[in-house]
Image (cartoon, rainbow, N blue to C red; front, top):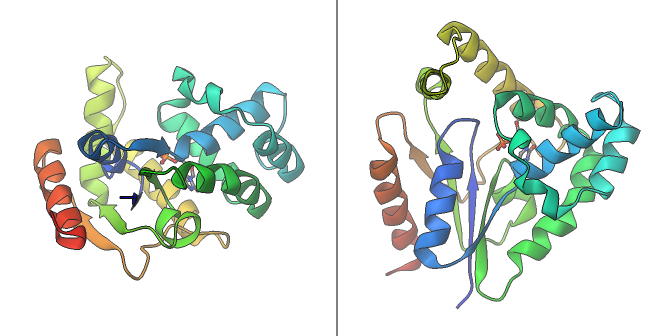
Length: 210
Ligand code: DC
């Protein structure tokens, strides 16, 4: 049986953690598609380029290497903000599409998470989940992550950052962040990671049967 699961949602909604656990649960491969956009932004900057330069971003997208996705510098909100800038270019999105679709086309299927998986990358996914959480809950999660690393940041600044990133991802013309019409919604505002995982498995089972 083939099972393709598309997980979309905004930054810090918990979609990445969920996607990873869902993939392990069903024994499927997992692709965090945000890493592709993060790697493109990293490579543009490493080449001395400007994130707003579409030609530089497209060239980086065409040569981005899957092996480079495990780079720890891709983690964190700064790399995510840079990714969100290059992700608005249709040329960049087009250059990354085949890789994502080929990944989803594995025999057993796969779990992919991002912003446009249920709408553009895998419109025929067997299960589509759109994960949300309130702006405040997401900023608070970020805040706690910074605190755990001993970094002193203001919660209010994180809230502003989260809202700016959402607006950029939601309001762009090319493959904006939006729930597919047939996506199941999961709001994780009041849920801890285990509760969110139980809830998402319940949703998946309701869609595919057990
Ligand atoms: O999921 P993430 O935070 O790692 O994504 C970083 C940025 O990359 C996100 O703000 C927008 C972009 N992105 C995208 O446009 N489409 C995707 N499928 C995944 C990420």
